[in-house]
Amino acid sequence: MNDITILRRLAQIIESRKSAETDSSYVAKLFHGGQDKILKKIAEESAETIMASKDGNTDQIIYETADLWFHCLILLAFHELSPDDVLKELERREGVSGIQEKASRTSD
Image 1: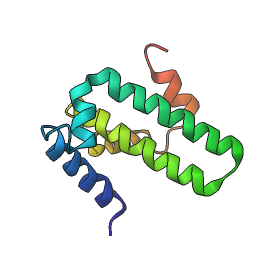
Image 2 (image 1 turned 180 degrees about the vertical axis):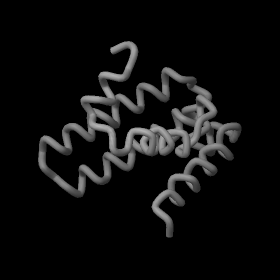
Image 3 (image 1 turned 90 degrees about the horizontal axis):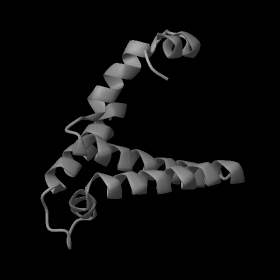
């Protein structure tokens, strides 16, 4: 399986569940709650990823990062974006030092 295949499949599943019944779909429940509910989940998953890292538990780091990525995919779908949009940006940055990339931003 291509590494990106899973991200694309998840994005398609998320897209298909946007308008599902909230009592039958976690994704639909998040969409129904709006951007603030989605952002709250991302903040929660980010904190859990940080704590897993501080604890040094590699299994938990993987588990929490998967949760974080999943919720980021939901946020992308909320904004009508896809994993490919993020991958294009990462590809654009490839080979550019982080210092150069940050300096090229107009506002930070």
